[in-house]
Image (cartoon, rainbow, N blue to C red; front, side, top):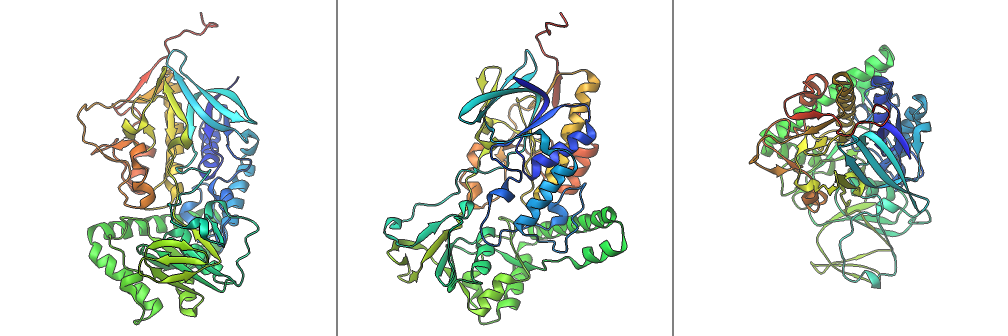
Length: 489
C-alpha cells in the first residue's frame, strides 16, 4: 500500500492548483493525486458541448500564481483545459497523478492518525494511505447530469442529448433544435448551435437573469502591454474581484434597483417591442441564483437575427416530431438538448468512515467552508457561488498548507474542527435557490450563524481569515495518535 503525506483527489482545476500550493509551501511533503478519469482537466475535459466556455472571467477563474495571457477574458473550454494542463506540466505535477482511480471509501484511524483510501482501478480495489486527505473532486456527479422525467420521450423520433455527455456524431446542421433550460449551459448552446442549425428554440419553464459582457477585457489587455505579466494580472484580478463584490452587495441591498437595471440592459439589446416581461424577467431577485453571462451579446444577437428564439412554457409531452407544450403550442424538433442541470454530489460520492463509524456529513457543520466538524485531517475545495470558483479554491489550498505546517511545528498528528455550541442554529450550506442546489442540499453539511461555521461568499473577507487568521482559533482541536509506532517503541 502506497503511503503519502497528502493525498489529493481530483486532477481538475482545483486539484492541480492544490498540488502547486503543496509543492510551493510544503516542499518536504510527499503527495499523490487520484483522478477517476483518464485525463487532467475535470469539468473542462468532461464537457464537450458546442461553445463550452467559462461563465466567469479568467482573471479570477485563473490561478493566483499563473497569469492568464490570452486576449479573451471569457475563454472557451479548450483554452481553459490547455491552461490547466500547462500548469500541471510547468510545476511537475502531472507525474504525481494516478489516472483511472475512482475513490470509493476513506477510513480514518485516530490510533495511527492516517486515512486509508480505497479506489477502484481497472475493476479492482487498490488502497492508499495518507496523513491528510484533500478532496478536489468538485460538487457534481460526473457519470450523469440531471434530466427530469418527460412524458412521451419514447415516442420522439429525433435525438435527445444531455450536454454533460455530448455525442461526437451529433449533426444538427440545418435541423430544428430545442434546448430545454435557461441556465449557463443553455445560453451558451443556443447562439453557438444557431450558427448552423435551421433554428434553435430555448425552451424555459421560467426566465433567468442574463447579462452581456465583452469577451475581452480592454483594461487587462492594455495593462499587459505596459506592465510585467504577473503585475498586470494581479491588478486585473483585484479589479474584477472588487467589481464582483460591489455588484453582489448592491444586488442584495437594493434588489429592485438592480433588477430594473438588468432588465433595462436586456431591453437595450432586444428593443422596446420584445416581450422582456415574459422571457427575461425572473420571479426571484438578482443573485438568489447565479446570473448567466453572455459574451459580446451573442444570445441577443442570435435572437435578433431570427436564428434562435425563446419560448417560456411547460412541457406537456414529447411527440413523434417535437414537443407539445401545456399552452397547446407545438415545437417541431429534430434534436432536443436537455440543458436541465447537474446532479450534485458531496466528495465525489466517497463514503467517509471515522474510527470505524460511517460519518453522516449531512449532519456535520462546515468549518470555514472547507472542513467538516468531527472529521480529522480532511479538507474539501469548494468555490464561490457568487464569484469565480478558483478564488476560494486557491485560498483553501493556501490554508491547508498553513494547517500542515502548524501540525509539524506543534508536533501534532491531526486536527479536527469541534462544535463548541451544542444548540448552534442551523442554516443550509448554500444560500441559493437554483434547482440543482435545492434538489440536493439535504446531503450537504450545515452552516452556523457566525465564523468559522458560516461561509461568507466574500473573497476579501476570506482572504483575511484564511491567509492571515489564526490556525489555532479555539475551535480547531489538535491531537496525537494513540498508537505508538513499532519503530519508535
